[in-house]
Image 1 (cartoon, rainbow, N blue to C red):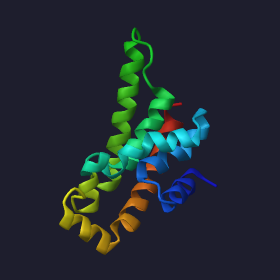
Image 2 (image 1 turned 180 degrees about the vertical axis):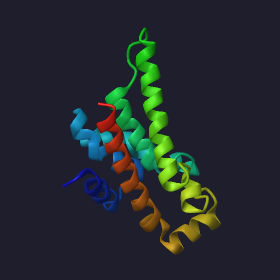
Image 3 (image 1 turned 90 degrees about the vertical axis):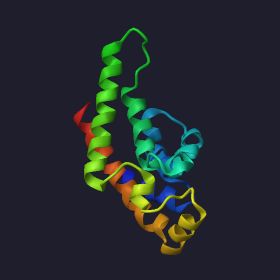
Image 4 (image 1 turned 45 degrees about the vertical axis):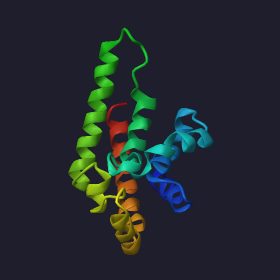
Length: 147
């Protein structure tokens, strides 16, 4: 099963966008799937505030696992990690129009009336899988390019 399919399977099993993307890549980095699911929990729905798309958050956590800054004295490592993250978010925005959850959904999930519209229109079942698939595909390209 490819990463996009795995992420979509996780999403269809009651996990959020962030959990789905992070967990699809977790085994590649020695991260236990249960721990990945736990880490990703609070980032779904734009950190529950409609902000940064959870799929993007999950992808950024994966980039942190691969390129993250961990040596306080290594400013080059930090700069490279930031540049790769910026490139990733740029590509996601170009492909999807935004990296903001409420923009992608067209509604603000923090507002009860908007949440009702999201559910009524099935946007979590339509918009979110597209964002997850895009997030994973862009992530795979970035990981391959910045090896």
